[in-house]
Image (cartoon, rainbow, N blue to C red; front, side, top):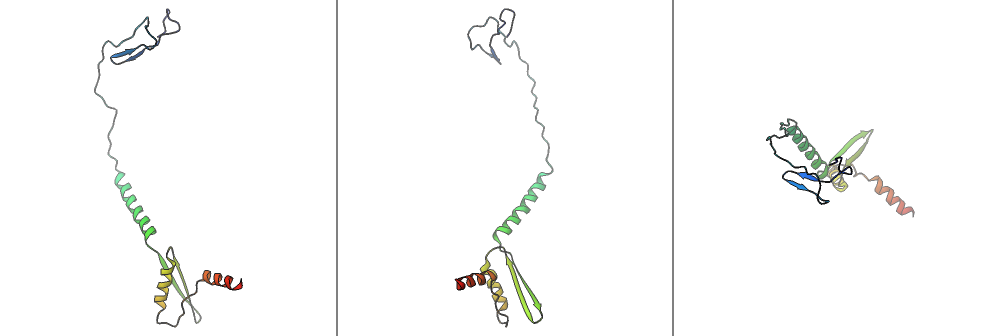
Length: 129
């Protein structure tokens, strides 16, 4: 508090039912005489109508995540050009099961099993060195 008698001011902490003077005795004192309270809250409750949509979206996302992470996706293409068959395939994981599927499809036919171009390049490099 700043007064004409104390131009430097006095320090006093005023709280509800407590007063503290950390620097000792002050010349002036300020206290609460009475306290009236109103029981009021500033909280407003509203229903969020988008929450079920977020849950449904999260479920769809998790199904896609599980499907992409744990299930192998394989595609096999066949194309006939003149008298030759061209076989191609794609997988997101487990290349050996893709080869096994192609071998099962070609079993009992005169079509030979395809040769992996990367393996062929590696064998060619080994034989030339």
